Image (cartoon, rainbow, N blue to C red; front, side, top):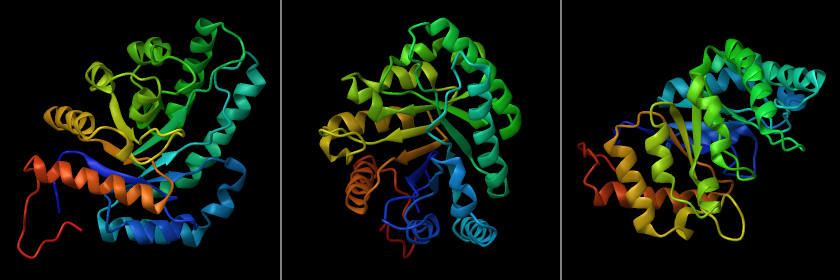
Amino acid sequence: MNRLAFRLGSTSYVYPADILTNVKHLAAHVDDIQLLLYQADSINELLDKDTLTTLKQLAYNNALTYTVHLPLDLKLGNEDYNIRIQSIKKIQKVIEKVKVLNPFAYTIHLNANSTNDWNLWQKYCIESLKYIANICGGPQMLTIENMPDYAIERLDPILNDYLFGFCLDVGHIWSHKQDPIPYFKKWKNCIRVIHLHGIQKRDHASIEHIPRKEIYNLLDIISKHNFNGVITLELFSEKDFFISKRIIDEWLLLSNKIIYEQGFSYE
């Protein structure tokens, strides 16, 4: 199989089925699967003991890693201390559940406040993230994702002064009609995960909607800098995923970066 420095990943909801079914179907196509654990309340139902055991075995059998997308309804920068603690407890519940899988990284959203006091928001986010970092195995394991509803520069004080990891969501940058390459170069030393998806009236569309040259240039830069994290095709349908993966395959072939082995077929 192709042995670039980075690992190519998918989400755990490419097929309209549960996590285990998706992992079984996708393990032969990717190096990493992002477990979508959006709601802490359902974590025991999603990942019971037997499911976790099977997921661990599938990872071992297929040289697979897991990244974990933490719950969405978090308020880590809220002015109310009790609200922040409630969010941290949700995260702790998920992390304690999935630790057995030895995740490659945990991805987290810093949702914007209803107020415009960004300095206070940043202060409270940092306090919350420091606590969470201790739970998940260190600050670099916790990858902060840039969001489409505020400028990526809002994360500067958080990423500049601390050792947190970064999840560069390229699709969210494209949604602002910006070039992701300068952001990759700026944060390359702390980027652990990259989310790749296109934009076409909706977020998380196939990357076929992005000009090929733009995609290839981005992948060339990522490869040139020997990025050794995960590039997740953050898509939620079989069609979008396999179209996007085919585009990645095309780039690999055009770049002469596939290592051919006897009897090997990339698909």
